[in-house]
Image (tube, rainbow, N blue to C red; front, side, top):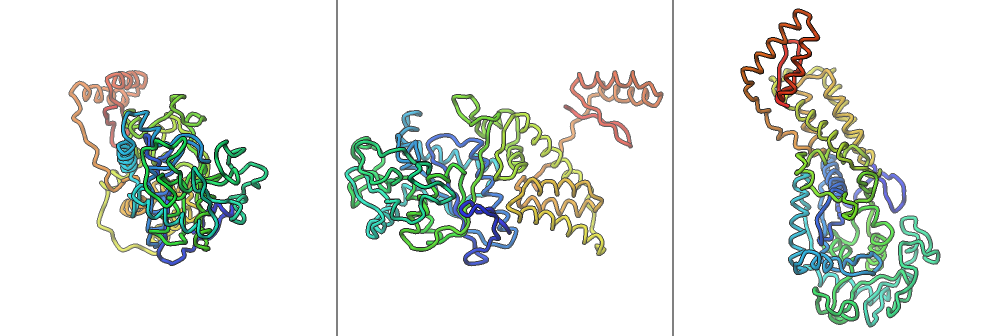
Amino acid sequence: MKLYNSLTRSIEGFTPINPPSVSLYTCGMTVYDFAHIGHGRKYVGDDILRRTLSRFGYQVKHVQNVTDVGHLSSDADEGEDKMEKGAKKYGKTVWEVAQFYTDHFYESMDALRVLRPTIVCKATEHISDQIALISKLLEKGLAYDTPEAVYFDVTKFAGYAELFGRQKLEDKKAGVREAVVEGEHKKHAADFALWFKRVGRFADHAMHWDSPWEDGFPGWHIECSAMSMKYLGDSIDIHTGGIDHIPVHHPNEIAQSEGATGKPFVRVWLHYNFLRVDGKKMSKSLGNFYTIEDVVQKGVNPLALRYFYLTAHYRSELNFTWEALSAAGSALKELQGQVRTLRSQLQKRNALSDEKLEKIDAFRLRFDEALANDMNTPQALAVVWELLKSNITSQDKYDLILDFDEVLGLGLAEVKEAVVEAVPDDIQELLMKREALRKAKKYQESDDIRKELQQKGYEIEDRPEGATVKKI
């Protein structure tokens, strides 16, 4: 299996630290607002990664954090706490906000058939682990205490400025502030908070705990290092996130983790590109902020959204439109229909010839090669459609489709049989009249009946054995 490593900016062969075990850490939600379809893309990507690793024989331990404290509105320690922002917006306590939006997030992921992580860890439930890690960084001289916060000293971590191909700190292009804010005691603008004290702008912060450095709360970045180390060890195989984490959050994770342990933190960094909506950034002010509920209210199966995500490579930007989602929904319905048809044609399998086995194995190999090539889901989908058009038996097609869906996660094994509705007598009479006109080669008149049936809400499907109608 090959994956694109954002840290080295190259596609590399993947080999876990302790095969066949794979340690996977996926950056989770900051639970101060509703999960949206942009989040869905990232977490479906994580799900495909996990399912792919399992397909290739790895035993995946998947840890995901829930950020319920410490994430400010700016990644660079500026602005208000997002949890308190959400509490003010919705008239709830910060604790109520955290629980409500955590529940909403996982309900949304369930609708997209995203597997639950092996371990879900909340930042607020791991304060002692974060304090212990901060203490270690202070002992090693990599952090320093100030009247307002404990900061990590980025100048003490060699190569910090160039992580993920960023520019030098002196050029001020590393995704940090232009200068230290007045009243702060940072040594460098890029230094980041490990622990905020309940003073100044945070004097009334609702979430706070005792610490060796006064009452306060952790910064955002420290939680991921502390919790990944607790559950996965000092070094892990794969860490995922959105590309928006590349400038600040993930370099900070590397610096504090490797600074504390002296070991490589992550073997492969995997980042997902953005989902745009009508070519623009998703924003409530633009009226293009959509949740899974919005998709359902439009009468669209949430799995059509999952299918839509799979049509683009995870490192490519993807543009959402309702038309594109409708097309994905049509493709999913066609796929579900094909599965129903194949299921109705299942027969007891006879012994397979070598030629048939070669064809089956060829499709399976091509599907696996697409996934092994940096999770190329568009190519994997193409193999599925080629399989359905092939001349191998219905039984083998059906078995392969369900096998492939163990990774695609479209729930094809659970597709229900189509409900056949009784056709009213007047509709049946029109259908018989049209058949008679067609036999008489009166095509214009037969086409008029087709239009009349459409107006009545029925669609004609001409088949070799005769025409049928179905409710539109």
